Amino acid sequence: MDVTIIRDRLSIELIGEILADLVKMETIPLCVYGSDLLPKNAVKSSLLGDCLAENIYQIAKGRIKGPVYAGVEQDRAFCRCIGGPAWFGFEGFDPRLPSLISAVLKDDELTGKRLKESEEIACETLREIGNVRSPGRYVMISRCDDLQNDPGVRCIICFASAGKIMDLCALAHFGSHEALNLISIPWGPACATLITYPAGMTGNGYSSRIFIGPTDPSSRQWLPEDCLAMGIPVEIARKMAGDADKSFLTKKDA
View 1 (cartoon, helix red, strand yellow):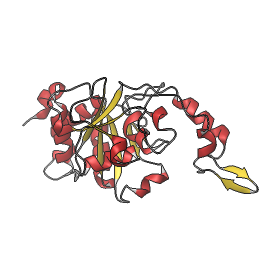
View 2: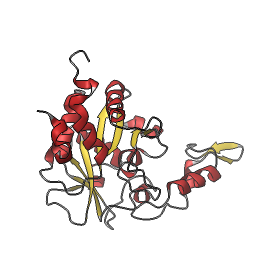
View 3: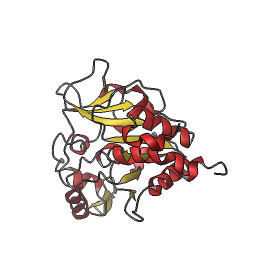
View 4: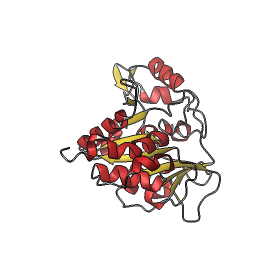
């Protein structure tokens, strides 16, 4: 099938299938969208585990059935991180967050998570991100192959080895005039790399950029050392899938 001819009509299911087949991905591509209504079979992320990013990885591995959703509900915590609801646009950043993630000198010892040199730098970083806007009452995460129709998908998530992510990055560059700004390795929690940034939820908007990571050290607790994540805005992912037949990835000597 010549997918380049029907690029503008590629379904979410087909986009995921093409990208996975191109690099022989061992995980399942996922997609993210907002919804004000819950599908009957949707499962709240915090019922599965207290780390939303880890739950996303488990969906990609086929260990959790989707769709899974994140939303603020009074009967249960959003996730284990105090910044979680803010990264999904459900509330503002907790004023304790800059101190928590910084290297704070107390009684001649450094405390805090030491992810930022100082509270000042942490505050400046959060200001740069801007206000985060949720795409709906609920943020939905689903397998691409589970979607028959497009409910307004914002981004595609892929997990793969460094070599396979490298090939997907090269494919993204194939149809882009950008040399330096198409792909970013951002600061932030893993869920921001997977969802917040590529879904264009930040006040400064990054819907034309791919994000690779995560850079959050806590991700080592659940993400294998030989695995990286890639958050792709949906229109970039659609173009990547549509360009596949023309690119080096389908050359016989590739």
